[in-house]
Structures are given as C-alpha cells and as structure tokens.
Image (cartoon, rainbow, N blue to C red; front, side):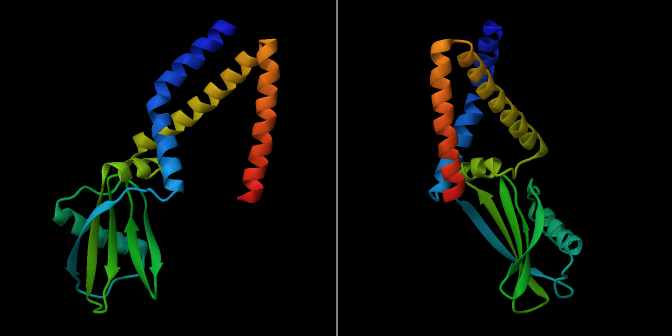
Length: 184
C-alpha cells in the first residue's frame, strides 16, 4: 500500500508541477496586483442604428467586427457590463479581450481589441478564461492536487513519527484557514 501511495504521489506531483507553479505564481502575484497587461487597439464602428441592449444582438455586431479585423474570437464568455450610464459588451479570453463601447454619437461605437502579454495570458488561464481544453486541464489539475495532498497525508499516517507531525501541521493549518476565512 505504501509503495502504491508513493508512486501515485510522485507521478502526479511531477506531472502537475508546471501547472502548480503557474497557478501558485499567478495567484500570488495577482494578489499583490501584478496581473500582466494588454496591448490594445481601438477602431471606430459605423452602425446603421444605435447599439441594441440585448446580448445576442451585441454579440453579432462584435463577431462581424472581429471577423473583419481578422482576429480569432476570445475563448471566454461574453457579457454585458454597466459603464456609467451606458452598457458595454465585454468578451474575455486567455489571448485577447474584446470590448464594444458606445460613443456619444449613437450610430457609432468603438471596438477595442486587447491582446494579452504572456504573463496576462497565464493569469487569464488561472481565471478560467481559456478554451474548454484549458478548463478541463485545470479541473484535472485540481483533482490531481487533491490526490497528491491526500496521498501525502495517507503516507504520513502510516508512519507513527510522521503521523504526529501530520496531525500538528494539519491542526495548525486548520487554525490558519479559520483565521484566513474570518479575517478575509
């Protein structure tokens, strides 16, 4: 049993190490406002009528404009967000974000295409803004992390000297978690 636990622990830990480092680094640095940046370009859009307020209609306008710009669609979700007294369409992804902003002249709008820098791309992956493949790998990573932690705990539990240390570390970790949640 111990040999199997060690093998599972070792293989999963080594397999997921690059993803673990990326998640740890992007999460820690995001917490201190190091989020990466974008390279943005704006272009005016001439419309036949003022911008609609329905998501599907706005999405069609943006899809046409993005197609004309020769850019691939963002990999994440499309949403309407409030911007002052008007609405904007925001379409986010790992490699780029696209914004459709109204102007003071109703039959005109501004399309903003924001390409991510390499660091921002990884932050966007951390935030689940990537493709379905990237999201699936992130879910597998989360499951793998849980198995690595559980297998480490089981290995420690099987050795009396380590069992006491694991209990002490687990107790301290639980107290720290409670402080984290309450102080949050």
